[in-house]
Length: 218
Image (cartoon, rainbow, N blue to C red):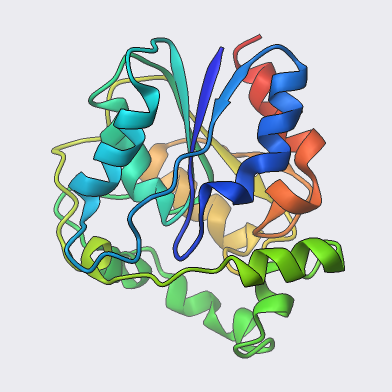
């Protein structure tokens, strides 16, 4: 099976290297492309282009979108032979909605107080359960994030007609579990699957995350 990972804002494909290694050890192929997130002219179409280019002529692909990558992953599934779409602690878009509007439309503001306890401390919000050396490397690899993907309307008329899962990270301080369960039910009509870990569970709990992804298509 081929898995392709669509990383989140200001991030890179490196973020998924541990999960990719776990999947390769299980006999799968894993692709971790970088999105053009620092390019102010690059919008969702260009993000999808980068992922589609990495996939090439591969088929039966499992597309995994994390965080902001949830806006791009469905666009990829509309363009390649996708076996499954997986939202992993990800934004779930609606037709015509901008990424900036998503926060208010999903009621996220009502959960803001839960995150505000950590202020702007990235280690506390994103990496609280990630080993220190991995956190240091992740922060050193942080990239700029241009606004284009957040200000353009999401372009599809509906989510692509492929099997879809949502994988919730129970310790996520950016997307708290209780709010995420409601958002997923409203947007996808699904009860999300859950594993332990914070927003960056791909660094704190990669074996369990890879195992869940492999089980989806076993």
